[in-house]
Image (tube, rainbow, N blue to C red; front, top):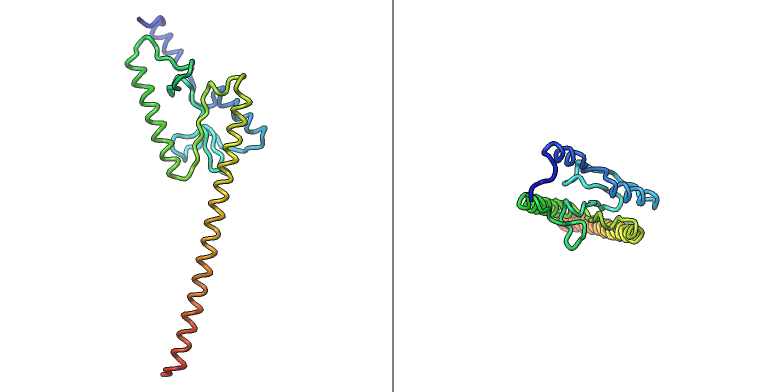
Length: 181
């Protein structure tokens, strides 16, 4: 089935699609802001420039368009009937890039949340916001627990080093008393 639009019309249509600050992203960002979360947007220092970055909770959020990222079993994702090979390959590349980005972020200690465009529709928005906020708080608890564990380990190590130095000094003093020069 041939494309029903002229190349110029198709170009204009595709050029109008933005990758940042989309309507679903703005909906999620505004809801998180109202709940008191503070975040950065599209932080270039992180792999994949996540849509929302919550450093305090060591969490990043990607808001994925169902079509562009191939949301399985979603009514918003259907492979176009024209140029099918191109679109199938493009969406597969997007999915592979997403996987690589998530792995890189997780390797750097970031928790990755994916919110699909269809989850931000009016009928599902409240439950999605609640689930995202709950997960962000859980990630924050995990982060604080890990920080506490590291703090305790550092304190324990410092105490062990102090005791070791005291033992060493006591042994040295005893040796000097037993065997004076």
